Image: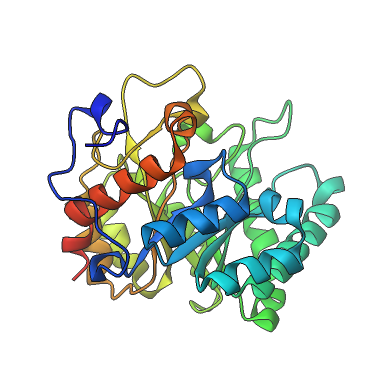
Length: 297
C-alpha cells in the first residue's frame, strides 16, 4: 500500500493497475494533481504508470514553449484531454478586450496541442462589485464572442461551474444548471460544460442536470470533497474516495449521457503535492479502477 493511501482510511482494494491495463484506457492525469512536476515530468509519469492522457495547464506549457510542449506529448504517445484554462471574463468593461485576446491565445494553444476542449473558468467579482447577476451576464457575452473563434479552430469551449465558495474570486457560475443556461444558446459541438465532482456534488438535482447536459459534457473531472476544509479553500480537494462524493452515481449518470471522453483526476491538495508524484499517480489509478471505471460502462 502506498504511503499516499495511509492517511485516508480507505486504501483501494485493487492492486495498482499496470501499463496496458484496459481499465486505464480513459484515465487522464490533470497536471495540478502532481503540481510539483514539470510538463516533461508529468508526461514521463503518465508513461511510467500507463495513464494514456494528460490534462495540461497553460503555465507549464509556457515554461517550455508551445512547440516543445506539443512534441513532448506527441513523442510520448499521450492524448491531451483538456487545456486549463481560459475564461476570467468578469472584470470591468475596460478589461474585456484584453481578456478576449488572452482567450484567443488559449484557443490557439489548445488547437496546437490537439486537445478537444478549453476549460473556461468564468471569473469572480471585480473589487468592490456586488452584482453577481451582472458578472454572469458578462461571462455569457464573452463566451458568445468566442464561439466563432473556437469553431474556426476546431476547439470546444467547456464552461466549468465552480462551487459557490469560489463565486466571489473565481467562478460566478456556481451550478451546472447555470452553466447549461449559458451553453444552450450555442451549438453543442462548440460550447459544452465541465462536470467536476468536487464543484457539483452538493447541487440539488445535479444528476438530473447531468442528464440535461447530455452531449454537452465536454469534460468529466474527479476530485473528492473532504472535511474539515483546509485554511486555503483552493487546496481543499481530496483524493478520489477520501471524502463525501458518490462517484458511482455521478459516473453512472455521466456515462448514461453517452459521454465517451477521458476522465481527468484534478486535485488541488498540498499534502498530495508534497508526496512523491509516482505514488500519487499509483494511488489515483487504484482508486479510479475501483471506484469509477466500473461505472463508465
